Length: 486
Ligand code: FUB
Image (cartoon, rainbow, N blue to C red; front, side):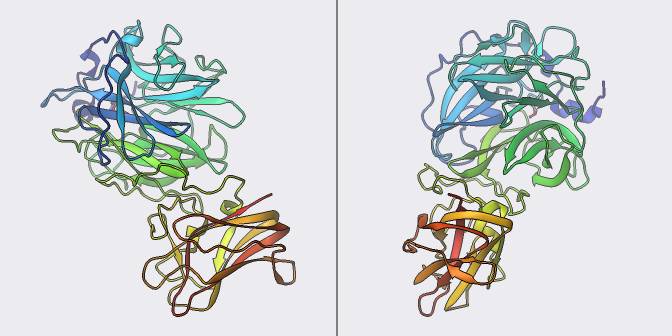
């Protein structure tokens, strides 16, 4: 088995295998009072290794609990807790919902976990120290609701050191279900990432364990998700080549692939080193906005073995790459939903955006980068603006082949200075030889702080244009412009 440098083991893993403890009942703990909107998201206990999951209008975060006393240089982790929020800003701790005692065959170390839903059930994949040969195993518990109760789904490890081609450290499962229903599990530590298909029962591997290629400098903590048909794998790395300067720490790198088992293409660092040596994160879309959930040592009295979960916004560029996370102490603004874009198939992400003019400090990529503005002055996810131009300017989407479109949704940008809501606007399409107003266009509303929708008769076109006329002496801008197929 590949071993990490002694210094690294001493800092991060020493003694963890002897941190035994068993909880008898989970979910019996009275929920703590709702926490404040700030990072870390809860501070009455230390929480680590967060795994977000959205069910309906609620974001759940599954997390281990760090119980190490001050000055203890080892993990003391015996339970997994569930936190929830309906706005990604204010959190409720539902207490321990599973623990080492959930698994008769386990003895210690409730390390990183992740929950995956299937057929109305919730499968909780956990890293835990089994009492068999070797150290860490991956177990799976199941419950009928996101809060459980959870029981052992298998009666033994899903993955252990005796699993052929398993990782040097069988920890940190991430489970992803593709659109065709096939589920995949990635896991691993000590630079050994592994993957396998899961059977529909979610408790057996389906085929061999493979070693995915292209996950540059993988150390541990994989997290898989999909966006706009592209697979993403984010993971902790601890190299000193652009990641960290001290390999006891880690950053989060990410890679993309066009198929779920890779090969992967490394894309860069998405989260720099945090205040704890370990760096473990998950990504989720909630009420139209993307979030990264991670841990730090930032809570009062915190440390490498007394970590706390934080939440921040995650932003994508128009080409699908991820902008580096900006950790905050405030956390994200409340996102209670309802302010998101209209339902339907939005064709904007697959288009190329151009404009008659964009201010050098703004970006036309803002139009279709999937942001959910909190209001018309919210430029946190890029903004398009054409100050100091006046009169009529335009933005345009171009597709490589004709698309059918029958409505657009517009979120206007108003910076309270030179950029204001426009006087009027008109949707136009390219006929192949000229731009014409789309037929039967409803009014082009110019309200602020909301999406406004313009409907029209279906056009089939490679180019859709929005001509925007400013109020006298002012310029105009947009935070999002969406184009829907019928
Ligand atoms: O919390 C214990 C271990 O630390 C996790 O399994 C790793 O991902 C690291 O965060």
